[in-house]
Length: 231
Image 1 (tube, rainbow, N blue to C red):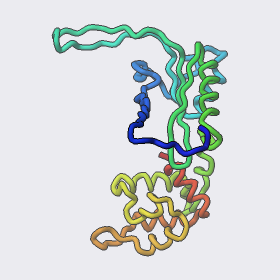
Image 2 (image 1 turned 45 degrees about the horizontal axis):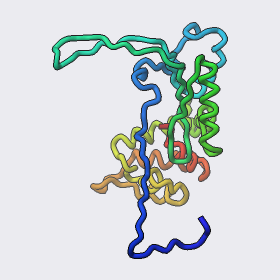
Image 3 (image 1 turned 180 degrees about the horizontal axis):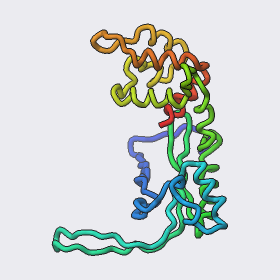
């Protein structure tokens, strides 16, 4: 581009084509064989891959070891059962990644778990400096907010309360501005003081969540919103 405006006459025209490729599952038909690394045992991988397995566990990722297998299917047309072979493929690692207010996954493949982890680390780095992964993403969730008798209520417990609240009120209910819009400053106190449901009945769950949120700093509340309340 020359930095000059484009002039288009009556006889001129142009066309812009955007190629859109629908997102495909990186594990394909192997998805149902993928295991959470937290559920895998040490003896399921070679000894030299144990450090790589530990890394995926810390990242709360999944692993597909790439071994061949068969799938049992049924043909409606032929009214008969048959088996379909799925060939071996590279080891695949998938870990969740997070940005403020958004999440995705990073995937890497390789001939071994070690090389798949290395490829996944590179995929994470390519997503930019704002991306976060576990266990860093969980920082602060174990902090104690309130002690009642011998019971300790932590930030992670507050996240669970918020997720349960969303089950009944998908847009944040009485705490919509705070929970859904992320206005975690003065709006929290105002919404707690005026927590009512549609029928004007006091919203006790919203009051509890709001009071617990007020035990945190504004920056902490914003970070909680950005990480989706641990979802």
